[in-house]
Image 1 (cartoon, rainbow, N blue to C red):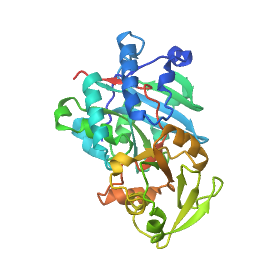
Image 2: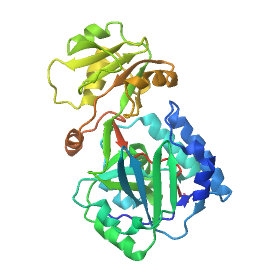
Image 3: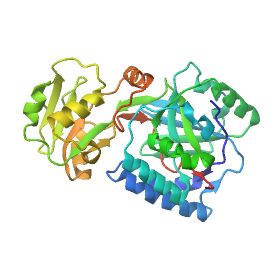
Image 4: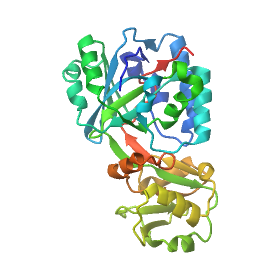
Length: 357
């Protein structure tokens, strides 16, 4: 794999300190995808006014994110179309979401967030950046309680060390950015497809499941339907799920589902086929089922129902194991759309790439 340097567009420390970038704070809303256009308009305006400026010296970027009492380090660079085959996709796509990204990219020619990827290798990110982060960062900012630090890497020796160190890596697993990768992999974009990507090692990435909200009417027979495959127990917000699925209904009732027989299928396949399709009798997965972050819990249910007014039930899904994730990918299979919640999430606008065409 060849990780290329690039000229990023970014805000300076004063802008992050000013509070003007609150639109980019990464807070989750039910209208996340439509809000992407607001982000694009905001950033495009700042670029046009010279507030977001280009780093004229090509280089890599090092980002350190403090999350869950753990510091995670990312190397950000650019991967050209000829090397895009290095990416291993693990999730099915929402076609509507892919088309949305295509249209908005065509309009603004901006990538406002690197795709997040990781590799399975004994190559240590911390070894590759040794000494670089001992200098003061170019940017330090706190967003929603998370500390972000950024260093630009422009020293030729440091660039060579990182480039050569990552060269043996043959596979990158996409953690966040499947739709962006698919968009750049379209034949009409081959001549200009250079995707900015943030990379870390598998030991640093944090993996959770995405939970699900279900809109519309759930079958009145859902309990009988699910009773064929699950033992259904009453639960509450303080009940530990113990690796089982939990259902929270708008009425406030909470249930825990315990499988009657062990299944080798990934947990999200069980959720999609056995719970949503068979149990709830909902056929239109893409239209009635939406992901919510894996760092939410049953105690956050009221907030989720406020965001999704038409939501009838929330499905809290136990964590995906990294071994299960790799087993699915290794045999060429894919999880349902947005099954995984990888961290660290980078705030939109922290590193920006403007494309000529």
